[in-house]
Structures are given as C-alpha cells and as structure tokens.
Length: 593
Image (tube, rainbow, N blue to C red):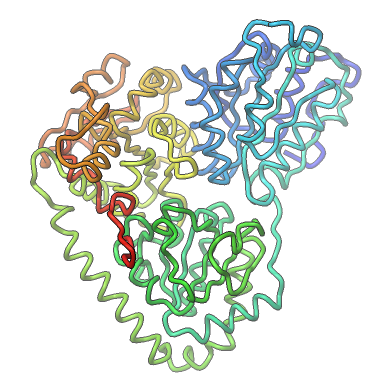
C-alpha cells in the first residue's frame, strides 16, 4: 500500500458504492473480513468477490465482530466485519462494545434502509444508528456514494488514533447500489492509519521530569501495566525502564505479557485475583500506572491503590487520568513514547547505582522481598498446578498449558471464569500479546470466535492458538465450529466442562450458601463428540494424566480445529481461583479483600 494508491478503477468507469467500499478496504490493507450478507450490502460482497479479497461467512454477526476483534489485537490492524440491515446490525452491538472498552480497532459495515423509503415500515427497519452509536468510537453514515473513499479513510483514522476503537460505516441501500465514476486519484489511503498506533504523542517534558524524580526517590516503586502497553507496542520501552530502574511490574488481565511472566521483575496479576501484587501495591510508595483505566477488576472494586499513595498515570486518553483515583502526576501521551522518555530522564538519577552495579540499599531489599514473595507463591501454587484430583482441577489444566505452550503460542481466554483462572495462573513466555482476553466487556461467548480471529492473525507463522471457553460460552456460539471448519483454520478449543454457568453458580454459592442455586446448571454434554459432527477433532479428558497428551495431539493437528473437552470440578465452592471480593460481607471498619 502507498500513500496515494491508484489501484482503483479507471477514471470515468462507473462502479457501485459497494465496489468502492471493497476497493478502499483493499487499498487500506484489510485482512480477512467476517460477516453475513443481506440485500443492502450485496454490491459490497460482489466487489469483494471480484477483487479476490478474503471474506468469511459467519453464522452469527457477533461471532464475526469478536473474530475481527481478536484479529486486530494480534496484528494491530483494524479488524473488519459487517452486518446487514436490522438484526444483522444489532447483533454486532455486544462485540463492538467489547472493542470500544478494550481500545481495539475494528471497522464494521452495516447496511441500512433505502433512504427513499425509510420509516415506511421497511422489512427489518430499526433505529440502528441510534442503537449502534453509543457502542462505538464513531459512527459515520454515508450520505453520498462519491464520498465513500473519504469515509473509509476517516474510519481508519478514527479507529487507529488515540485510544483505538471500533467505527461503524452505515451504508444506506441506495448508496451501496448507486454507481459513480471514481477517478483513480480518489482512491488512496494514509499509510499511518493502517495499524495502531496511527500517530504517537509524547507527554509534557516537565511532567516527565517530575515523574522521574518521584520514581528515583521511591524505595518501593511498582509499575501497573494495562492493555495499553500492547496497543502502543511499548514492551521494549517498559522493559528498559523496569530493568534500568529496578522496578517490578504487575499487570491487569489485558496487560499480561507486558513483560514476560517469567521475568524476575514480573509481579503477576493484580486486582480481584492476585498472586502477591496486591500486597506490593498496598505497601508501595510510588505507583506508575501505564495504559490502565484502573477499573473495578484491576482495583479490587476501587480499594486499590491505598489512599495517599503517590500515583503517576501515563495514558493516551487524558480523561482517564484522575478519573477516580487521586493522581500525583498525569502523563498524557503514548505509552511507548512516555516510557522511553521516562527511562531517559531517570538515567542521570540512576547512574551512581549503575556504576556500583547494584540499586540503593533500600531498593535492593525491596527487590529481594519481591523475589521471596514470588518463590513463596510458586511453592504454594505447585499443588494446584500438579493436582491429581478427579474431576480435574482448573489449576492442573493451566499447569499443563504452561508446560505445553511454546514461546510463540497464543492463549485466548473467554470472559469470566476462563479469563480469571488463566489470568492468574497462566504464564506468557515472552513480551507481547500472547494472551488475549475479552475484558473490555467481559462477555462470554468470545472463546470460539476469538480463536478463529487469532488463528487467522498468526496464520503462516506456525504459532499454535489455544482458546479456553466454558460450556456456557461455547453453547452461545457452537454453530461457528462450522465456520472454523469451512475457513480452514486450525486451533485448539479447550472447553471447561463443569455442566454449569460456573461463575454464576460459584457466586450464588458464596453469597447464598450451598445448594441455593437458580438457573445455573446445564445438561451434561460431550463436546468432543459434538466437535466430530462438525468435522473437527474431539478429545474428551476426564483424568489429569490425559491432559498433556490430549493438548499435544490437538495442537499438532493442522487440518481442522480441535476441541478438548475437559471435565472439571462440579463443586461450586472451588470453581473460582480465589475469593471474589464482591461476595464478602463488609461491616463498618472492614476492608474487602
């Protein structure tokens, strides 16, 4: 792709609006697209066919948008999906809100009514523009066919600039079917907006200097890394700062992989479920928050950080700085640029320590404490990772994944139950987005479509994709096993089979006591057998010693997706990796866990 591509139609030759949409997406470098056609977008589908672009029919529009989301997270390029008028458009909402909240660039095309007949009770007509607008970063309605190139460029710019997010291009039927003679010079794209971040902005230099002074003077500093580290590609800059200044790094669910989980400075997950990072946060005398919104999960329902702790907050969205937690220094800018500037500003203050080959006495004692905490947690966690319990303990399942996943492997985790277990116990082996969890909206049902999008994102690299979903989550999207089979992608889908809506049942157990469950149980289902009916590989695992061979066999299969159906504990008292702070009884003077 070039800044001024002239790969379009010959000047003066009329083409449909739908063909122009397809041509512009091709010029912008669009990857595989996901959707389900209707009459309004038929010219777009014809354009995709004629241009030889890759488009995958899905069995539910939400699947297409979730797959586009996962593809975008791993490639940094906007994921593309579409839905036709009415139910096609409204089915996109849940997945688009996930992308909006998580800062993921997605472009969704929606067909709309013929403007000459709107509001005459047209078939499938709905107030879809009003429904979709709050679910996305921006909604752009195409009012004239000749403006399609401009609209697509605008969509890419919005999707990839600042905090990335989804954009809807709403296309009326008459615009999609209308023809216009585009000049070759009309069809061009801006190379910078083809992936995130489109453009970088740096924090104010004086704020950076103040932040560096605060970090240099702290005895117990800690970095809290969120998903913005991945969006910015700030991994190297973060590692340079952490290693150079000797500062441990804890991460959110979305920030896993900000630095390798096995790195000596990694403090693991913090928030609702934590290894030992929460204790470090509570005792810290300076927190550097990077690309993290400090939402409910990360802050253990707003009990972290401890009031009075100095907080430096680096974020691309100025409105997130000081939203609820008091911030000492706000750094408005790109994570990679800001971290790089911070590391440079810190170097003079750290020179004495670097010359002596060791941090200050206070910082050295702190880092020794972090190592001891990590060792103690590893000893305590061993029983979970090596459990021989039947039904299978979730810790054993994650332990086997830690052993079998290669360095370049990608683990996708469905919302709720799966992402909390994997977020706490799974270790990425290198920096980068090796862990994909839909924590923007935390909707279940992401596991299968996320695996499809992830597999397409790493296609050709040899990197295996494994996705963990619950039986409830798979039930929502199971029909798209057919989509995965037809698309020719290979991945491993691990089904956490507890014959229940596990997270809900565990919460009911915690709040109302044993036996008090309502609408939380499912019919016992053999998902391995079900996978076979879709032409996929199926493996049923009921004993822990069967896990590793089944996972290896599934990950080695490259001709079709594999489903590994793992029968896990049915005890709702043991379905969560720890105590959910929302279930605790809090009395005056108490502090929730």
